[in-house]
Image (cartoon, rainbow, N blue to C red; front, side):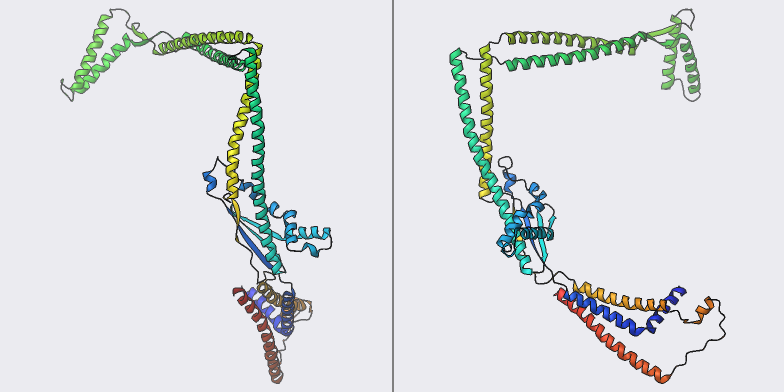
Length: 501
């Protein structure tokens, strides 16, 4: 910290030593920057705000009318707004094109305006168009004319598109009505000539055969899956016994012994009428009775068997699978019979019925297109009425450009602050540079750093008269410098007040 203060005092001594030079350089740089700032050409900015108005009617007529997709227009807004065609129309309306000598100059002017025109899109329903120019009147007129031309062209293009679609649908409806009438007449004439009252549809028979084959294929796949499942169940049954041992004679005797011990333990605490004691005695007597009924054979070999529940469950599943396989095979057989019948029917369809089917198919195709065109015509008519009534989504100029009275460039507050900081920096920097270039010894510390022994230091002898004159000179110079600097600060304050006004 002490070293930092020493450095600061060192620089302050440098400035104090060459204070006149520092002040003159600082004021000179301030003056140059301030004068340059005031000589810069003033630039004025004009902007216009356009709102994309989405009508509530659009939601009410959704599916009935077709309205322009505004999201698509927003995506290409910048390219459409700054197109050469629109900017050329703007220059023609402002009579700027008459001031240019050639078509090349006009194209150069259009390119320049494309680069200088700014477009800011905010959200999905607002955009701002602005331009900066040295002529405030041109900036205002250019922005307002550009936005107006774009809105007009957009509205005109939308209406022309709607009217064009309406005319096209009118023409197509007349054309397909004529084709439909011709197809109906051809069917009637063919029926009369051939004496056909009805026809079998070959397409229907083919569709039925295809559907039957598809169902047969699906059933075959299902049967294969069920067969695999049946084989798996059979393998499981081979590895299981139909019965299981549930209790051996040896286990009964061990159980009787356990019950006897439990009863003896309970009698130490309870009487023979205790419920659990009674329950255990009944179970023990039952087991003894079973042992007595088994005879005197080898008790370790006597076992009680029962049906294996897992074996029974798997057997039941196998039977269910086999039943389902039988059902599917019967259904597949029936479908094959139906498919065969349809193939026989298809072979005997007369040639004239095939021709009639083609005529009917052509008539139905024309009718479907004709009905679709009628529906589209209704939508087109509603869309046209919405365009006439200006009820669709459109652009509204909510804030047209006004005459810019205050320039946006140059920023005099910023430039004057830069002049002050730059002047002070240049003055101090020059003083420090001159001091660094000065090779003379300024204090005894420099000699000690060089290893030179200092024998004595002669103090500065001050002449009172000279010192007094120097103070008067300093007061005069710094007073004049302060007045000059106050003038620059005054300019800064004046610019600030102008901006706030």
